[in-house]
Image (cartoon, rainbow, N blue to C red):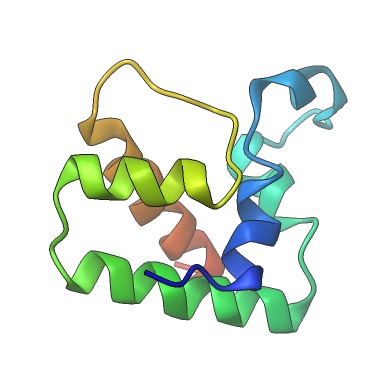
Length: 94
């Protein structure tokens, strides 16, 4: 699967090391999205929406997550899907 640059641009900000840099009132999802321009947001939204519509396995999503450059991991495999859904909602302004 080809991972678009817009999603990689988002993923590179998904890391625990930035916790001390996150402004008060934001979380890591808002912080990562805040580093994208409108074009990148639209590209990331389309890609995540497509991933979730494919009903990929948790393991497939984890592989894509880390191949995109994310450095944040979760204890449960299902948490990656939950985070992607949350990112999608926020990109859409839900």
